[in-house]
Structures are given as structure tokens and as C-alpha cells.
Amino acid sequence: QTLQVELAERSYPIYIGEGLLQQVAVLFRERGVSERNSLLIITDQHVAPLYLDGLRDRLAQAGYQVKSAVVAAGEQAKSFSVYEQLMTEAISAGLDRKSVILALGGGVIGDLAGFVAATYMRGIPFVQIPTTLLAHDSSVGGKVAINHSLGKNLIGAFHQPLMVIYDTAALHTLPEREKAAGFAEIIKHGLIADEAFVNWLEQNVDPLWTLQAGYIDKAIRQGCAIKANIVSADETEQGQRALLNLGHTFGHAFEALSRYAQLNHGEAIAIGMTLAAKLAERLGLAEAGIAVRTKKLLASYRLPTEWPTGFAPEQVLAAMKRDKKVVQGQLNLVLPRAIGQVEVVKAVDEQSVLQLMRDVQGGKD
Ligand code: NAD
Ligand code: ZN
Image (cartoon, rainbow, N blue to C red):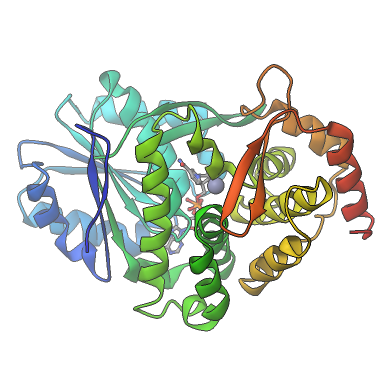
């Protein structure tokens, strides 16, 4: 049942199941976190009223010293100022090198609290407790970061968690847009590596969208498994880990240009994956039909796939070139070859990308 991310001495388990938040203390003991380790829960203002007290009380009852810090919800929390504020809280709370940080929330909290853990006293352990569907992706793999106003995730580290505790019961309070965003990353994992999984996602939209037990946990498990396999093979992105960036160079550009306000991460990469599929067809890399199928699948999970209003293709291209995947000015993009198969295409012709974006914007593709 339990998935394992294999990374030699940094290997860790991913627990997925309904009601797991009730069992945190047991899981902590299993992983060697005892009452001698003080804990700091980091969460946001949306998640705190829903799940913070329950988690804190359960751990306190089990004998742990627990403190908590609540930050504003949203991408804006991945900033220097919030990071500094959390460092102040960690120091004031007296955290030492044996303390453990708990990231209770979505990908924003995972990235932010993980970066605090990675850098506090040169690194202390942390536990991912994802509460969004999207965080099935962000909680696995150890990439932690905050943003700079000039680009997303530009300040960060690789810091693997001690474990991931995924309580699927928490997903029922997610707003619809956030739920859709999570499906964008689940679909991404299928498109990258598993055609059978894509077929299954196409055939089971209703039970998945309504978070039916037996479906949603399976989708999370498969998404995490695909990610975990790639991370095990290439922890620090020297090679195949880059494949996980399908749709992300486009997506990050949309996110950065709108200052992380208009589109959320999942929505931005949904549009990005659609553009990547269209580009792959135009470049003769993938056969015709792949773009239509990609778009239809994303749309069935209520994700945007059309050109978003207010963005100029030239600006998007310029922002893409500021993405950290750009090396020596070359635009390298992950593009699909087929459903379930992608590759990194180096030095993609910028004019083709620009032309595609203009056509999509003008409704000509
Ligand atoms: P998020 O953390 O902002 O959560 C989305 C919204 O849902 C927030 O308003 C949050 O407060 C709220 N929320 C969270 N859980 C809830 C619940 N159970 N019920 C009700 N509301 C809830 O965003 P996200 O979509 O989870 O994550 C996006 C972030 O993840 C981005 O910053 C992205 O860069 C990052 N990310 C990182 C990686 C990685 O490998 N590190 C991978 C993918 C994405
Ligand atoms: Zn992503």
C-alpha cells in the first residue's frame, strides 16, 4: 500500500489514505520522530481553520511539543518577506537541529515550509502533509522554493521530506478551481509516462471529479508513483527529471506575467500542455490528434485550454526565456511524442513558438 521514494539514505514513504491525519502520531514514531523532537506546523489561513487544531491536538495528546505558524494563503506567500517572518518564528520558538517542520497545506506551503526547513540551521527535517490534489506532485521529490518578482521558484533547494502523509479526506473542502488544478498535474503525469493511466482518466471523469474513494486515491497513488520513479532516477534534474516540466515553461510564463494572480499553477500548465501538444504536431514530432485529445481531457476536468485574455504572445515568449530551464539563451521545451511519451527538445525555433501562440490567440489553431 505504501509507496516509497527510493533515494538511498534519503528514501521516504508516501502514505495515502482517507483519515490518515488521525494517525499522524503513529506514523511519526514509525519514522523515528519522538517527543524529544519539537515540532513547528506551518500552514495558511484557509487550511488553518479546517485542519490545524485537529493536527495540533492529536500530536499534543501524543506528547509532542507543537508550535504553529499561519501565513496568508496564496502564491504570494512564497516570498522573501514571508520566508523571513517564518525564520523569525522558528528562531523565537527555539527550534533546534532536531526539530521537525510540518508543511500542512497545498504546494505553496510545501514549497515555502520546505525551503524554511532546507535553510534553517543549514537544514532540518520536514514532513509533507498535503491538503490539495495538486500537492500530490509538489510534496514528492524534494524541490522547495520561493519566488522572485522576476520569476517563479528561482530561490530554492533540493530537500527531501522525512515522509509524505496524504489524507484524502482533506480534499473534500477544496474549492472547485483548486480541484481542477490538481487534475492538471495528475493528467500531466499520465501524459508523460502512462498511456493506460490516461485512458483511465478519460473514462472515469465522474467518479474522479467527485473524489470517490477507490478512484481518487488510485489517481493520487499513480501520479505520485510516476513522479517518484522519475525522481529516484534523477534527483537533481540532470536528465529525465526535466520531463516533469511538460507544459511548465509556457505555464510559468503565464503565472509570472499575471503576478500569480489571474491563473493558478494548474490552470497555467493546462494551457501550457495544450500549447506543447500543438507545437509538437506542428514540428512533426507527434502525430495529428494528440493535441485534440490532450485538450479534451483537460477540458473534461474543467481546466482552461484556450489562450487567456490579456497576454501578448511576444511577452509570453520573453517570459519563457527567463525561465530557469533556459540554458545559454536556448529555448528547451518538453514536448509530447505520443500520449504517455515525452522528450526534451533543445533549441526550439522561437519563431515557430511565437507563430503558434499568435494563431492560438487569434483562434486559428
Ligand atoms: P496552494 O497551496 O496555494 O493551495 C491552493 C488553495 O487552496 C489555497 O488558497 C489554499 O489555502 C487552499 N487549500 C489548501 N488545501 C485546502 C483544503 N483542503 N480545503 C480548502 N482549501 C484548501 O496551491 P497548490 O495548487 O496546492 O500548489 C501550487 C504551488 O505548488 C505552486 O507554487 C507551484 O509552484 C508548486 N509546485 C511545486 C512543485 C514541486 O515539485 N515542488 C510541483 C508542482 C507545484
Ligand atoms: Zn507543476
